[in-house]
Image (cartoon, rainbow, N blue to C red; front, side, top):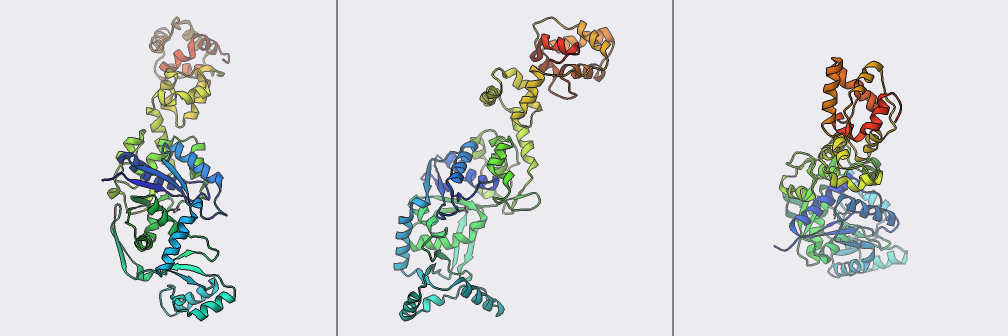
Length: 446
Ligand code: GLU
C-alpha cells in the first residue's frame, strides 16, 4: 500500500482548542506510524476573518504537541486551482447560477415548511430562461453558484463509523461560490485533497453530511476518492461542545497553564477510544494505540480536571533528561537528585520553583518544641551527607529523646522546611545540606 498523505485543515480564525488537537493528532500520528506525510492546510479563503497571528499560533501549537507538519499549504494562495475547478463544473452543468436573495430564499423556506415540505432549495434557478437571466443581470443581480447534487444515496465505508450513507435527495444543492466570487469551504477542500493526493480524510463527525456532497464533487471532477474517517468530537463534562470561546481549553491556554503536551495529547487521542485514558509519554507509543475502528461513535466526554491528573502522573515518572533544559532555565544547578526527590510532589513542572526554594532557601523554620530540636541538632551526623543520613539521624534522635513516629518526623520537617508536607526528607536533607540545616534548626531563616 502506498504511504498515507493526510491533512489537518483548520481555519486560522482563532486559537485551536483541545478538540482540534484530537483531529490534528489522529492525522499526524497515523501518518507517523505509517511512514506517511502530514500536511497542515490553512483553510483561509475567508480573507477577512483569517489572521496570520492565528496561523502562527497554530504552527506553534503543533510544534509544542510534537507534531510539526511535513508541509504547509494555504488556500489563500491557491485560488487559481479553485477557479479552474469551478469552471469545469460550470461547463459540465454541475455548477449553476442562482439569483435569489436571502430574503427570497427565507420566504420560500417558510412556505415549504408551512406546507409540511422539507425546506430544500427548489432549483428554481435551473428553470430560468436566457431572457430572465438577462433581465436579472441588467437589474445588477450577481449570481451565487450551487452544485447540482445527484439525488442518490451516497455510501462509503468509514474507518470509524463503518458503512455510511447519506440520501442526497434530502439535501439542498450546496452553494459553492458566493455572489462576490468567494468560495465556501466545500469546493476548495476537495480540490486540495485531489491536488495534494490526500489518501485519508480524517476529521470530526460534524463533517459526515459534507462528505456525501464532497464525494459527489470528487466524482464530478473525475478524481478517485480518499478513505474517510469521521471521529467523535470532544465535549466537556457538562456536555458542552468546544468552541473557540472556551479560551482556557485552547492549546495556548493549556500550555500557559503549565500542562505537558503529552498530557494533552494522551487525553485528546485516548478519550472515547477502546484504550483507558492514561498518560503516554511517547508519541510513537500513542500512535500505536490509534485504532479507528474502535473510536466510539458517541461524543467523547472529558473532564478538564483529568488533565491535571494525567499531567501529575506523567511528571511523577518523568526522567531527569526530559526536563533538564527546563530546570536549568529555572536554576542552573537543579540536578538529577533534586528532580528525583521532588517530582512525586508536582502537578506541573513549574511548581519545582517552590521546592527549589525549600532546598535553597529562604525557609522560615517553624519550631514549637525548642528543646527537642536542640537535642536533635546535637546528634546531626557529620558531613558529607547522603541518602542514608536522614535514617541515621532520626535513629539517633529517637535513641536520645525516646520520641518516635510522627511526633519525631513532623517537628523536624517543620523546622527544616517550614511546611507540613513535602518530598521525602531522606532525599531532601542532603540537598538542604548541613549548613542550612543547622541554621534552620537553630530557628533562623535560611
Ligand atoms: N476547515 C475545516 C474545519 O476546520 C476542515 C474540515 C476538513 O477536514 O475537511 O472544519
